[in-house]
Image 1 (tube, rainbow, N blue to C red):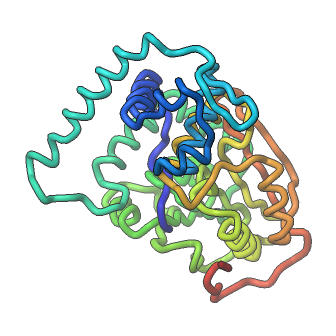
Image 2 (image 1 turned 45 degrees about the vertical axis):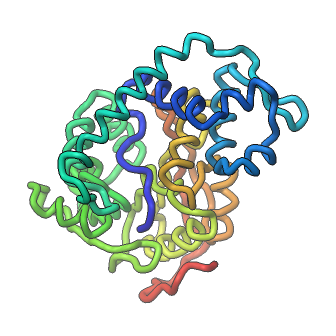
Length: 319
């Protein structure tokens, strides 16, 4: 399924993210550039990554640190107290090289590791995650004997919830994740499917399909293709649910945008309006939009504009 925003970006304490941000700002020379005033074009000429520098500046602007006047970015208030955070981040970075030095030349595959999944499983037991799963279950309202598809289901937390309501669930994810899940105890009504859903889909039809924190991993053309394919797998009256950070004014949205730029450079954060347009192009319409009581998540329910045939052999996504 390509690059993905791994785990849930917000599980680590907020100071960790802030320290990493200040370290990047100082180590790359962005702090000095902001002191003299700089344009995006000038930063790109200095080999700054366009999507990352824009996401970083937008986050700093949202926090009140920088300002943009015309095309020039500069400090609004200089973070003189950031030195301690930078020193702490540097110390942390040195410790994180321990694995490379402990076993030189050994590198893990660019996939979700077993250790990361184990950590995610423990994190999913946290109260915020449990509340999220409970809220999603209330939104989805799965019924006994319904068939559901959980796309990018990760550690199976949502699939367990849906199965607990009596639904049959197909959990789709990358083969390494599915291999890990096969060694875990899942309800008998949860089936596992490994593959790339942007190129092929699990067989069958579904009363409900869930894409939780998934769309941001892919560009609009791939999302549109995927929604069209998944929409063709819905039973009449079935719903395709998109769940993510779609409200740009939420305090977490700027942090999330930077995280997406780091981990999924081909993807992007999506707004509700953007997803509505993509869904319309895929032959779907919005039936419901719901916001979580806390946590910043939004759930969008899509339904088919008209019945669509099952696509048994989807082709490659449009370029």
